[in-house]
Length: 315
Image (cartoon, rainbow, N blue to C red; front, side):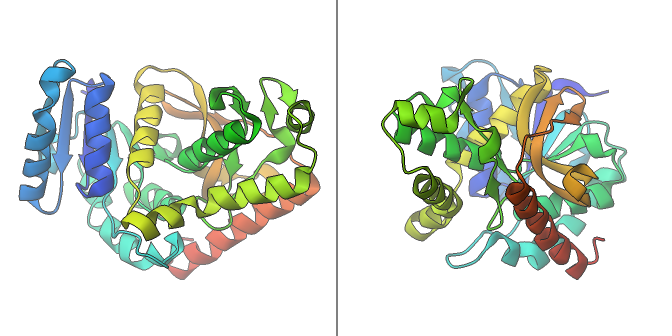
């Protein structure tokens, strides 16, 4: 029987440890189980994080093995090789698919009944791999997708327009990576079309601003990696956001990575589109208003992912 107040994190590197720390602070869970190929690493992170528990309330943080995490409502998989400076997310594919081959079957053979949240990169390919390797229903295998990219976009647009980023409604869709794209056609600021709001704030060079903001968002991870070797705080908060939508059954609309079956002429590949996320995982995708150019870019993003998936025999 699943414990709705329990989450497990597989992989205790920067992203896994930061996610566990953020989850501890969130108040969503009473148990956080950490699992790593290096048992001592998991034990050390659990001990360190648990010392902050008195400041937030009651939550048990501990190192675990696979048999001990099968009752977790959500298993967050962050395990994988780190992205190095100058390396794209897709460069990681061969290394991390092999790592997943040692993780996902361990979950599958124990008949896990909860939700898999895939965070390791390249997340779209690894979400597809997890679906194939686990045999779980597609709605219960969710990639963190472009939740973080979309948060970065909202931050940039908020700064550009001097408005609260929470009032910005816009999505990054497609690959979480170099072929990602902004769904500009559907972007708005609290219901006001983006171009109209820009002009209200004295901005008229729309095309240039859109290009610059999109490039800044796409390259922000590379900039962080160049400066501090890894990104982990932003994605940790994204993990909390997705977990909150699941355990609170919020039915939030989030741009998570999941299988696409025909939308926009795209089939049988995992990429990010807005979806309703709740207690059962992904309920349904939300159709966005896209122009012909945007649909073309989305299809190109899907084609790039499909090529990679084919190269590692996932399709």
